[in-house]
Length: 461
Image 1 (tube, rainbow, N blue to C red):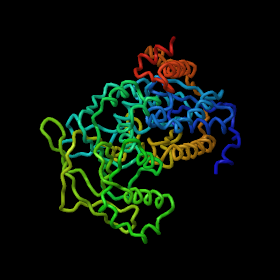
Image 2: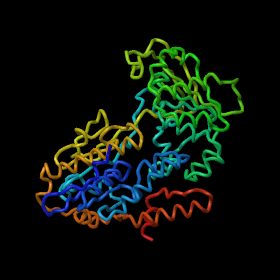
Image 3: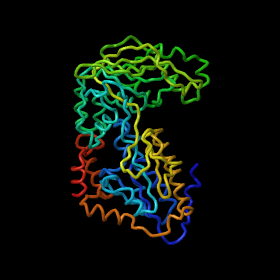
Image 4: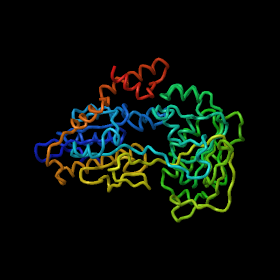
C-alpha cells in the first residue's frame, strides 16, 4: 500500500522545508518517518512537552505487553535520521504557541494526542473512589502528573464502566499475580500498592451487547487465561446470539464472539478462592450512591435498537438493577484538549477541526488529536503516513516555501529567554540508560523516572 510513497519528492527552489511536529507519540514519529524519507532536504523538529519521548507507547501500553513497545526501535531510528531533531520539555500552548511555530516553520503538524478522559455525567461521579482509567494507567506507567494518585484498593468489589482494551488492561493489571508484574516495567510504587490490594471482584459494565464490545481477542484471551482468576458471564446476555447471527459475522468478530460463548459454556461452579472477573452487558450507569464514597450504582437496563447488529444503539428501558461496589473506574473514552486558543477545535468531539488531516494552509493534524481515539498503533501509523503524504504534495501546491524561516532557531530564542531546559535526543539516551540500569538491579526491563525534576537532572548530568 505504501510502496509508492517512499519515492523522493523534488521540492521547487533552494529553500529547505522546515517542519515542526508537536507531540512525540506514535503519530508524531510515524509522520516524521514518512516525511524524512520523502523530503531528502528538510528540517523536521519534534517538540514534546515532557522530557521523554514516545507518548502512549511509554505511558499507555500495559506493562505486561512489552512486545507492543518494540515499535520504539523504529521511532529511535527515525529520531537518529540526520534531518530529524527531538526537543523535549517544551510545552505547546505554554512555552511556545501556534503563532510562534507558524512564524518559524513552513509546516506545523499537531500530533499531541487525546489526553483528557470522558465523564459519565451522572450524580455521584464526584465521589473520591470514582477514578478515571486514564489516571490509573498513568499511575502504573509512570506519568508524572499521575504518580501521586490516591487509588484506594482496600475494597473487594470494583466496577469498571467501559468495555475497551483500556478497561480490560486495568482489570488485568489489578488482578494479576504480583510475581508476574514484578518482571515488567510497572512503577515500583504501583507494584507495592497492588501487592497489598484487596480487590478480588471486578465487573466490566457496558451499555451494549457482546457484539459491540470494543476489546480485542488478544486482550480477552489474556483475561480468560489469567492465573488465579475466574471469568463469569451472564447467560442472558448471549441469549439472542443464534447460530444464524454468528454465521453472518465477519471472521474477526465471529472469532471473538465464539471465544466468549465458549468461555460461557466452560464455566464451572464459582470458586471463592479465585479472583473474579465478570463482563456485564446491556447496562448504563444512572446514579452512584453512597455516604462518604461510592457504595452502589443504579444501572439502567438497555435494549438495542437499529437494523445493523454491529452498530445498534443502546436504549434505556424502564427496568433498573443495583450493583454494590467499593470503587469505580470509568473507561469510556478519551478526547483531545484545546491547549492553544488559536487551534480551531471541536469541543463536542474533542478533536482539532480538520479535513483529512488538513486544518489550514501549512497547518495539519494526525493521530487521535485529529481522528478521535480510534484503532490501535497500526491505525495511527496509517493515518500519520497519509497526512504526511498530503503535506509532501501540498508543499509545492500551496507554495509553502516562498520565504525562508528560522525553524528551531526561533523556538530556541524563546526557550533561552525563559530559561526552559530543553532535552535533546542525546539527553534522552542518558535517561533511557539510567532507567534500564536501575531496572536491571531489581530484575525489571526498566525502572522509570516519574518526576520531571529527576528526568532533567539525569538529562543534564
